[in-house]
Image (cartoon, rainbow, N blue to C red; front, top):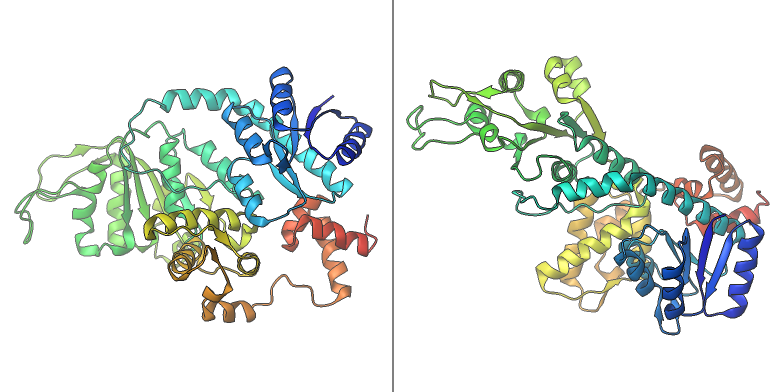
Length: 453
């Protein structure tokens, strides 16, 4: 039987939740403060921790940090009557599995427990391999100059993305990253590099869209001094610069047909000849490419070589758009706020409820780039500690008003939408709420209103 530690100073509430969980075949221990909880955690191997946000000698986030600092993989769920989104974000940043506000819905509690225990099982099975990888890479020097700004989202789409990165990173397989503009494809590429066996070697990023086709050969393969007009010095090409490491070609679909042929030859032979040189240079690179275009369609039109496409696309990863990662938006907003505060020497602490509501309902056509730019602008304009709706640009508000997506128009189609979402999610309430883009608690309230079991 699974063991749960419940940390709650409200004696009546803790007894109620304890009895409910025990009726559902869980073993439950109760602590009324952090000190007692810490002692219990040292004595027992718990499968899950429920903790109230407000405790007599601290708070649930402090307990969460303590659990994570001890390198345990125990899922932690926070309970609170003060259901502020900013607090939930802080908890998620510290590694909380989930966040539930009182009064609790019994079905919601059971679903969260089930999901948390399933994740713990998956993490446990991966722990040995993960530990081994970390030990192998902990002493390596990173030549990428900076860590990627990679936020591990909590949405279902982000979890798939993270799994793909973990799966392909240790290999030498060429990866084609697709996705809309602004979704963070280069960040994904750099993350693949840092999790690979080449992480101590160079990561060279090249924007193919900014290279004129006339000088592409020089950019990729280098040249010797005097080999053409303007070649006043020897130049090392991107292939040679990335030798031993990873070469990332962004917007690869913009390469001219002639440059595609040269790229294909270099990949096949694994050697390059600088312009004006009589000798070839052997190169060992891992190739990662990215595009926001449909390369298959370009192949059909004859604009992109099919043999090159298959050479690049040994494994593909699609980076989801921000509107499809609704559960991650607040996490990203908080991340970009931290960045903006440092860059602008400001100390904004968070967002108003109106702004957070806007974040969740806006479609974000520019994806993460648009969100980042908005938050930097808002941080600069804000005179208070909180970013409020007064800094929302008029064009963004107008765009939101013109997009009536995922909104209930009548009571009749509201019920029908809920039924369809539940069916599509195989009755998983958490997934259904994500499809409807409402909170899980709102979904439970709507189900109760329409007598949906």
